[in-house]
Image (cartoon, rainbow, N blue to C red; front, top):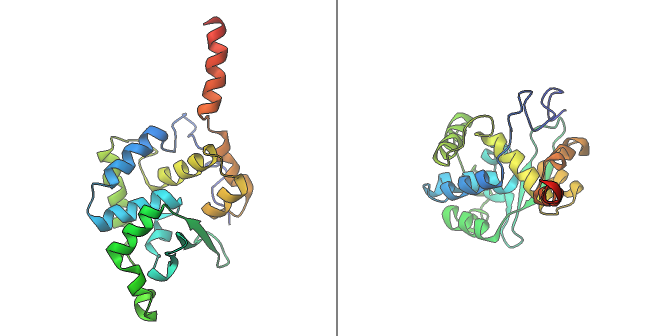
Amino acid sequence: MAEFSQESLTLCSARGERKYLNHAERQRALAIMKTLAPERALFALTLAWTGARVSEVLALRASSFQIERGIVAIRTLKRRRASVREVPIPPALMAALDRQFGLADLQRDALTANRRLWPWCRVTAWRHIKEVMAGAGITGRPACPRGLRHAFGIGTLQSGVPLNLVQRWLGHASINTTAIYADVSGDEEAAFAARFWGADF
């Protein structure tokens, strides 16, 4: 199943609007997330640090987490066949999730281990992320959960994470879909341009 329609296989709209959060916007969004009530904060931070879709984070259970290894197993919901991908998350985020939800305790019982952590509907989850964006002063096309997903893809590649690993973390069926994130201009590219400008401008 395709990740994007042919028209949307870019990170900019036909009018040149970005569909992703740039680095500064992502940092502002992360700062706002940390001010929220714990359950909302942890949902938003999990979304931002895994690159997952809203429905995929809403499907997480205590059994999805490998606490000691710092890994969350995410069921990819855009595939026809069942597929699970493992994504590492920051240790501080894993510790906060364990404190808030008691992941280790929940994992000791099969019933509680398989209960959803966030019993919200998608509309509620979307609303929480839109409120984060508004608080961070982010508007337009990037101001949505997909903007965070795109920012994750770009940020991982610009940090040196190999393309095939980013593909796996995002749950893309094709590496060609992941490759669109490599087209975004990063700091290194801007530095090359600055050297060129310095010669004559």
